[in-house]
Amino acid sequence: MSQQSRRVASVVTPEPVVEGAGVHLRRSIGTRKLDHLDPFLLLDHFESASPADYEAGFPYHPHRGIETVTLVRAGEIRHADSLGHRGTIGAGDVQWMTSGSGIMHEEMPQVRPGGIAGLQLWLNLPARDKMSRPKYRDLSADRLADTETAEGARIRVIAGEASGGRLVGPVEGLAVAPKFIDVTLPPGASFREAVPRGHTTFAYVDQGEVRFGPDRTAVRAPALVVFGDGDVVEAATNGAGGRFLLAAARPLAEPIARYGPFVMNTRAEIEQTLQELRGGRFIREEPRDA
Image (cartoon, rainbow, N blue to C red; front, side, top):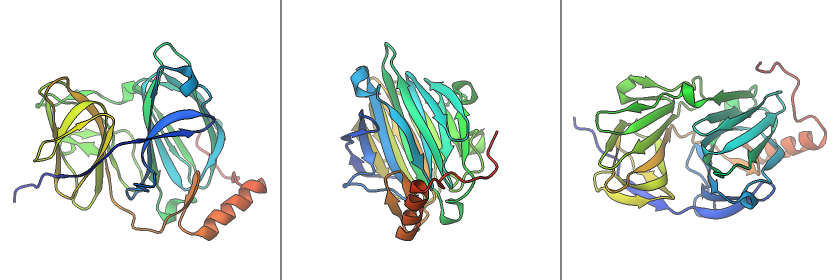
């Protein structure tokens, strides 16, 4: 049986938003037009050479019930959290945080001559894991092998597997078993990757122009590409090439109750979260990762 190439179902132009203490972003998931793509809750694209757009950063704030994935394309972000982690992630690095039952953290972009650029994605946790122990992972660029395929694409597998299982990402033990692949297509290169039927799948193009699917639909950055169902995602470039993040995951098909940085299954759980935050009981006393 031949594999069906996923067609482009829609192309979403990101909306400008201001978050944190005044950071200018482009948002494609988590808007009135596109509330979520189960299990993906939010996708922000930050990119600016002007310090006024980002230097105020994201001071200490809480999360519960989600995972956040941050890919840094350029610049540096200093981070700290209630688990005691401190550090800086830079170009090529990935930060994967599982907030679980609750975490407080800050993300402060550092002013550098080249500015800042990257993506942040929120991934929902299933009900059984929403109150799990928080976890935190910093993935330096040297842990994400840059592999050139036979078709000329350069790929970095962050989570899941690619190329028929020959490449496996370093992030393991995830609740929804997502596939995250950072794809760079030089001029004339192509890309083809299997994705299980029924999995929510999108590509976010943040550089250049890429043609997707059997119809070779042209998409110019910045843009979110939502795919229909099928067995494989296909992409190719002409001209100057392009870069995109491919993401896929099994839908949770669970109720969503969200309030800012909190995502639970019921309104009662949101109210409980707010009561705990106000009462100083938000961060739970339990073993943490070293």
